[in-house]
Amino acid sequence: MKAVTIGVTIPGQVTLTLSRLLFGCWKMISQVFILSSKGDHLIYKDFRGEAGKDAVNKFYEMVTALTGDQPPVVMKHKELHFVHIRQGGLYWVATTKADASPFTIIEFLNRLTALVKDYCGCLSEKSVQMNFALIYELLDEVVDFGYIQTTSTDILKNFIQTEAVSSKPFSLFDLSNVGLFGADTQQNKVAPSAAATRPIVSSQGEQGGKNEIFVDVIERMSVVIGANFRGIQLVVTVLSHRCNTCTDSGEGVLMKADIEGEIRVKCYMPSCSEMRIGLNEEFSIGKSQLSGYGAAVRVDECSFHQAVRLDEFDTYRILKVCPSQGEQTVMQYQLCDDLPTAPPFRLFPSIERDSCGRLLMYLKLRCDLPPKSAAINVSITIPVPKGSLRLSQELSSPDQSAELQPKNKAVHWEIPRFPGGAQLSALFKLEVSGLSSASLQEVGPVSLSFELPKYTCTGLQIRFLRLSPIQPGPSQRWVRYVTHSDSYTIRI
Image: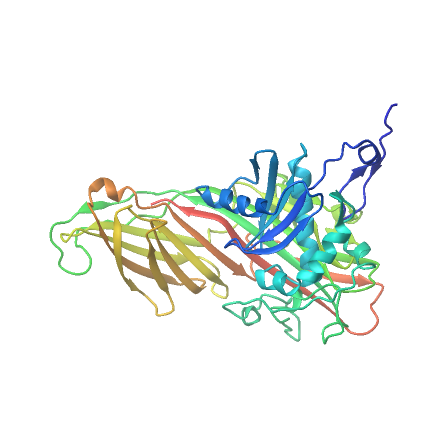
């Protein structure tokens, strides 16, 4: 008998075909489990009884035995396939014994994390522990005997009965102090830092009746800055804590600069027929000639959610979307090999060896952001020779910290807040066993991780955010701009 294939696609759900369901071609999920970064078992659900619970420990043994920070997404042990992603510092894992498409399972895990975020408010170990009953109820509704049923927040609202337990995630800074949330208005309103981390399906608590919508413009940048030159001097005499014969590196050449961005909407409004998002009027896609008045904003590629209507985009740069309760990405864009502004950080390193056999690293880090902007949670990792034993340091401000990590063969330098236009420095004195001129070549490249609140590298801005029909009662609309470092490497 010939199979009849009928495609079924529902927004926010995995696409199924009737032939796969009827004739067994749809591959099944055996288990789903969530582990902490330390391997603690947070959630475990066995749908088919094909693999024992020891598969959890086997997965963690395999993933921690691998070298490097990026283990493979798909791994195999005997006949069992492990597919996992990392979200919120947790391992989200699905297993299968069938020859299933890994892309389908990865998409399922990504949508499962989005569901948990919608219902629990945030993704963290504490949140999962506090809402384990809710997550088990979600898994019961989402997957039936290994077959994916739905991943739609709107559909699941009718079946989920467990109330979420909200918890404010720990943050070194109160992000409301740096204006992470909130568009500039006459009242200069700023939303609390945890305002967008409460559950979508509200309980009977204090925040349950608020009509709010959050629009996030999130960018991730990948930058590689080459070394212009580096002076390495073998010094016999030292007149002070720094050597007299020392050469500083000049500014390196920008070798790579890629930006990936997205506009993400999180809606807490029970009824909103249409939302209009106005972007920069001079927003351009591709290499076309820019013209007009305003600040030009260009990206190479752009894609939209299937629910976005673009009838006013070409003329007025307006996106129309009917947001459902929950979080969804309405637009994604990419800019390759180009930065409209200077890179946010420049490093000026000096590498020396003194007469006592110590390795001296003098680093000057400059923040090239606008004066009113600031970077937070700046973390600098400097690879050092493998024979490094002890570290002493001199930092330019008391809020900085640094430590030697012998296991990773690196010096870790932390800066909580780095204002734009400022320059900070650090002198690291390393005792290295068997230090030689060849050992000096093991220093670098330097990698940075940071967050730039209220700032986008492309210059993309939200001109307005309008809802129709006008919502009854008080409603609030918030806009957030933030740039994260996906990979920021400086060669020295």
